Length: 522
Image 1 (cartoon, rainbow, N blue to C red):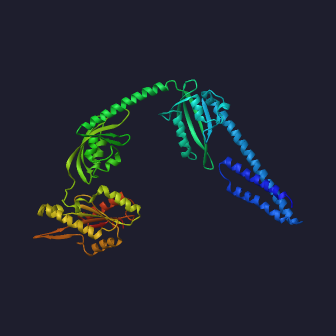
Image 2 (spheres, rainbow, N blue to C red):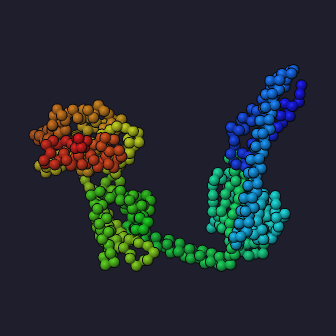
Image 3 (cartoon, rainbow, N blue to C red):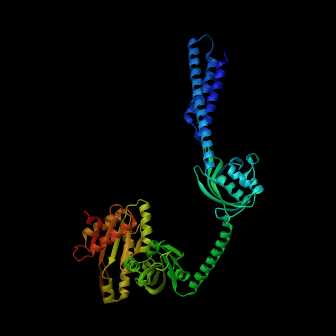
């Protein structure tokens, strides 16, 4: 039996090894080529069994197979040599280019932080040549030659830097690029400031080391400036804390409004006054607590401030817990500061809510408009089809005036019970938006049909008539309804459209006391 198949197996394995080397250089495994030529290597084993005599056909196939394999090997060797020469040329050009840039440097370390390459520019700070650093741990070299004093603005030392890069090796990601700042004292004791761009090196998604390219400059004044800066910052922080504590000693709720950053900072007294948990808000988040009818007046007061009219005073309803309370707001805009646009003001809270409590949990513990948005958002996230119905108990003020508030409160309580019994099911809730308006989310299709069919059959379907001894009263209801997805696809628009429908329903020229928002567009 001929040994030629064995020779070709070796040739084919060399080809596979060449493909692996090429893949390493490109940082990407050539799966198809690798698989084909690996199978090709094992296919030569079959010739040991096929060469039994003078089979000319088998011999021709073997020769052809062998020639193709050798040609493939030569082709991939050509590509490998070409790529290797390109990379060597590229590295030489990169090194020469860096040398042309004043005070530039680079160094490369492996996964164990051993030096692979380091330019002459950086070696001069260590006071060593390349032969003295090659293959040695870079942090050991730092300990022996230089002193690390600051890394990315934080005071540090070489051992802390070693710990940082032990973690870096575990957390670095492919294509990650970081900008670093390093302050060192070189082997002569001179302060050198290094600005570095750092990138991890990966092969087949495994961390193999890192490359650092940067620029160095002498830092003669930096140390002195850093000391002065630390003293200034310490004085500033002390002054800031004293000022905050002075504000907190006052019984007024002070605040700062940064018009550039659109943020509002509240003193400790203001936080307690308003029942809030954090001291800093974005303006748009803080405005969510202000009654929507009052917000335009506040925004108008702020926009009217000028150098001649620097102060304002306004009053609006603010949501504290589940109740709206009246809040006085006095502020002054500082126009003399060229670096910032600031309003300084104070709050004064007044007792009394937007609507009175009834004295029973059935109504008083209902959630408010502030909380309805989260509920509607959850229903949209769950892809639920539902309706938002706003019920306005329109003649309660007249009932209160004629029969007394006790009767009015009893009617409100009974109507809330009726709403819960008729429309509340799993995932639906009821909210009190104002003294007379209640919102119900209807998630059960049968209850939606019940509401619609009941209104078609009887215009008095929503009204409630009650007898209290000799007193006979009837509560008249207006209703506005908006449907999810059909009328709106998010919570704010849905509530807005339901309010529009309710406004139409209560209009004197509208024949019915009920309006579906979808009917307005049909």
